[in-house]
Image (cartoon, rainbow, N blue to C red; front, side, top):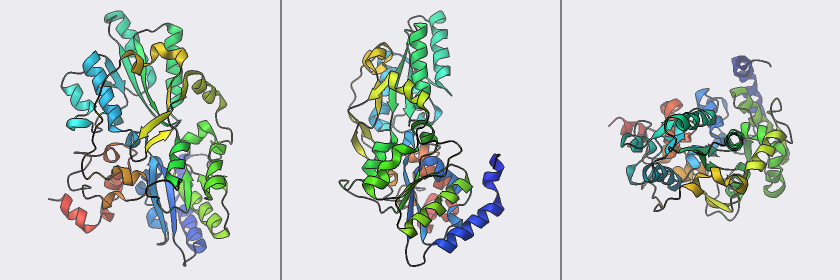
Length: 384
């Protein structure tokens, strides 16, 4: 297949659905975790779950970088803008994520902070370059988030800023790493562990770090993992590959997304990341707690462009909204519609948790594409 429409072909989808139905054993259940929010939205947008047999369920994972960012990091960003008067640039998904005291970046902007939405690191660099001409004293901070997929552009921005001698630009680094998160979910030491029979592995992340980065899942945890693309036929074919492995008792790493992912990944991007960023000793994840070496910080050689060092702030640890079940949703322990707030007081118009705000959040996926499947309890509540 060469074009995107072919990955959404209805006849091929029906063939795959029949194949999965034929191979799924009626005497057992299949619980497949999709790690990425992109998978979750593909499943709901194209009705993939409806094409699966009754005994195959998709379980949602933590693969949304906005959703896993703890409230304290949003608080820090707001404090940088308000206490130090910096121009804070970030992606649109973050603007409405709840912070402490019913704050958000959008509300801080309305209150007067200079917070701007950008589409890329290059936009933030352009704002910094313009400031050097118009307001030489004005500092520009890029609020960087994302998994390994969006980390290379941040690395390029750091190298560009240093090469140009751009002293009014810095990065508030919040890039996180997927393998440690997967280890935490599968770890026996977790307080609660979701039952998972197989995993749809990250695809875009794997284009950077390579499929081999997930060999530990089969080796250490005895689970099959298939690197899966984001189109509906990708997801369905990956589900079929997992069902076959489970039926055959195999626990292998397979790569369905071979058109973009190699075992070693993008070595040039990896070199950029190693040159500018280093692992943090530990980092807090919403829903997963503090995980060792699960995030990146700016390397000492680029300390002059590290916003955390240049603009230190003191913030009180934030408290999530009482009753918000985002942490359990991110660990596959609960579906969004099981949360008492879903549809009642939490919606995209009034989000109380990050999973409802982010375009990759599981709660947003249910709301946008799955409202017809919302249990009557919640559907009735949402109408009041």
